[in-house]
Length: 263
Ligand SMILES: Nc1ncnc2c1ncn2[C@@H]1O[C@H](COP(=O)(O)OP(=O)(O)OP(=O)(O)O)[C@@H](O)[C@H]1O
Ligand SMILES: [Mg+2]
Image: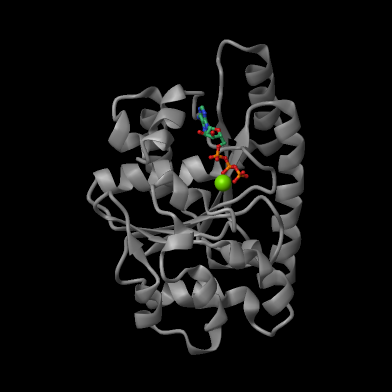
């Protein structure tokens, strides 16, 4: 199982849409996908029509039981979605309290990695959605990842936020003596606007090799798909947006992305 984490401290850049869309294109190819929602707002579950306040357990309960993790425990808290091949380990509001209640305990940064190892045989890919804040959940999400996808909206304010995310990954990686491997993925690209093309040019100058050399276009089908509670691949399979996520998937599948040990 590969673990791809979708993270950016900037809000509204397309993280949740990227998780749902990559899950959709993977499932359409017959892959088994586990989505993990680490955002207390639980937008990913709502996106897929699952109200996580109404289901018996969530990622929160798994974190609480971090000293007695088992495959059964993880399976018990995982729910199927309406799309064949995609399961969800859902979030609840209670996750927002984890920093305060568990953040200080030893080993709390590796809970997600440990629990994903228990279900590694059950899925081809795990996709981790992150909240737009740095905390113990994002620390877990980064530490669990084989590769990090950093969606960035192609406009200048979002690019400023990106610097912060890259610094966070560098600092956290240094403390763990790894260099996280990541790809910057331009989203909501509007080729008719100067702002989008200027932003893209800036990204390619600053991020060079770590920039995915392509874009996710702005496409109203994404919003329509979320209203229909379906990944865009299962709502508008021929849309430009879905084609772009198919290309991103090829790129991620072909990449030689490994944690690089440093120091
Ligand atoms: N390529 C796109 N084209 C058009 N709209 C998009 C695109 N990607 C995302 N959106 C829309 O932008 C909004 C924000 O996207 P999304 O929820 O995926 O961002 P996020 O980074 O997960 O936000 P948050 O930080 O709040 O979790 C949503 O309404 C979504 O439908
Ligand atoms: Mg989100």
